[in-house]
Image (cartoon, rainbow, N blue to C red; front, side, top):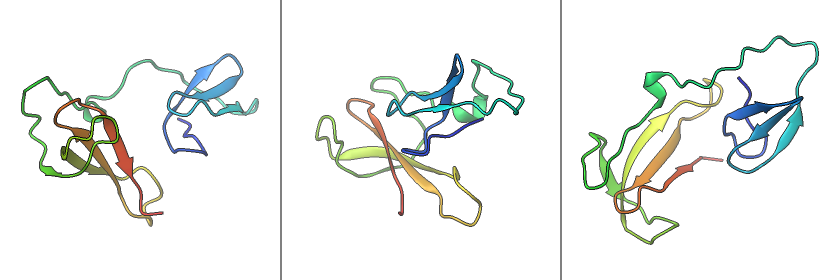
Length: 104
């Protein structure tokens, strides 16, 4: 699994490159490394939302950068090294746009 050096999102394999689906950053694959490419996500990585439905996630006051709504669901996930703080993720309660907040 490779993560983008620019934004930290998971990258996808495309020919001889790793391509970030969030920011478009590209980097070559290491020709010496062995990779297993999978289209599936683990169940623990998927957060299901449905319009007007409850996600089971807590809510907080956070302004959505897309629609300006002032309420969002939130969760935290460890995506960097264990000695660094977790990343906070938000999902807008109105338009379901998601964004993240890092401490750095």
